[in-house]
Image (tube, rainbow, N blue to C red; front, side):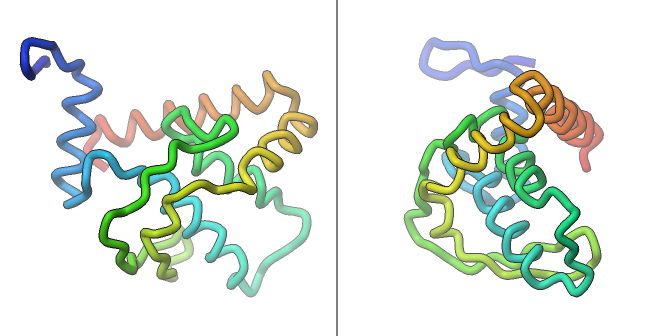
Length: 143
């Protein structure tokens, strides 16, 4: 599926992104993965079953990188009118983060370097790819 815009052709990927943004009532320029990564960070600090053996940095990075960015920085797109956003987490709890967190995550480059050392550049890229493909499959299904 393609759409015309001022003489150029939009890819089906861009049309899908427009559709997703519209359904979520979200500005197309904003990076939801930055907000999601901030929500995961907040959630991890509140979990009663928090254990040091889990790779929290990997989880945060994979959420931030699930659209192919965050290697090592997400493009900063600050929300023009920051608001509190309630996010549902996998265990059924909710955390609230402010959309102003969509600026630059200055911890990202160091986290990316540590993860590359731990998993190797190809191992980390493979894990990122698995999450990206899973995200694409869910998006195609409408989830």
